[in-house]
Length: 413
Image 1: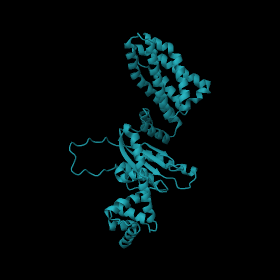
Image 2: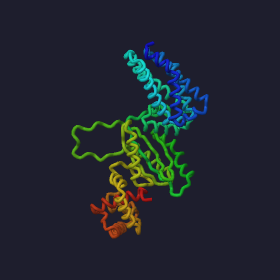
Image 3: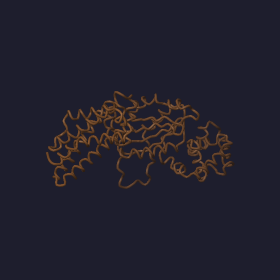
Image 4: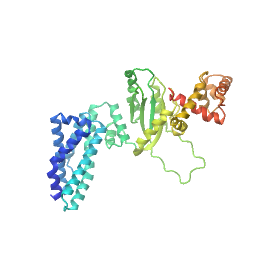
């Protein structure tokens, strides 16, 4: 054994104790190590074993054996059985990696005349065998989750893992019988809790429908119930075929963006299970960009109008004005004032919504509202009297369509 490996072996016990202390200090779920002597002893024993196996295998570049991988998987399974969260599991892996690299640096500094080849060999071994070890740990972790958690909760963990870039996502996907998506439609369906509803009733929501939706659409879904200040949300990651490369020369008139039918069907199926209106926002992204896409889809859903039966999932192109208005309070307040002027009615906000939804076609708008075209004309004149804006004028469309969207989104309470 070379000098570097000998130095690491000499430090194994003290390095393992430092790692256990760091877990107890920096990860709340490991606080038990300060009060449970048995748990601390088991964690320390595993940390020492892992370092000793590294010292035995790395010098000759031998792989972790099947029994080694079984032991690592057993540790993952044991930690999952204690209720360790995905977030804490990720922190454990990051902290362990950082401490191991620190140990190597300290041992290298202690051997100033050591062989550089040993360091290269050790880092190469870590790269290859570390990946195998993490995979075994994930397999053990997921094995425990399959016995401890309902199917819906396992799928919710898959969504969280995909959104956080957790390497355990692949193992979770296998466990729930889904493929790892490389490209997704990220959809957020906003479901505000009814005003004044007690917390227990708000929390019940549509959870009973989620498992049926998952099995019907084979899509990773996660439901977060509403609170007093935060709406309920269904987050869906719908797998899509990879996006085709852009053509060398763009067409003279690019086609209007379309959304996959799978996304619309999912939204409509979910909306039918709700007692209240909802609003859907969606965008697409590659796997590494899912966190940014989630934030974008959430913002779109909060700007989109609430509807009992969504006609389509809203995209940035549908609500870009409302997204901008939401960040400019004095403009939003001005639009809110115009909405107040429409209050005398009758049903002027809903009339304008139908008018713009049907591209200002009088006949189809009147049919949708189930009124005579002359009644529609009267209401549009009434809008002009109250706001000073003709609904069919350029300025009227720009201003009043934003009033409608902001009003129907629930942004003004």
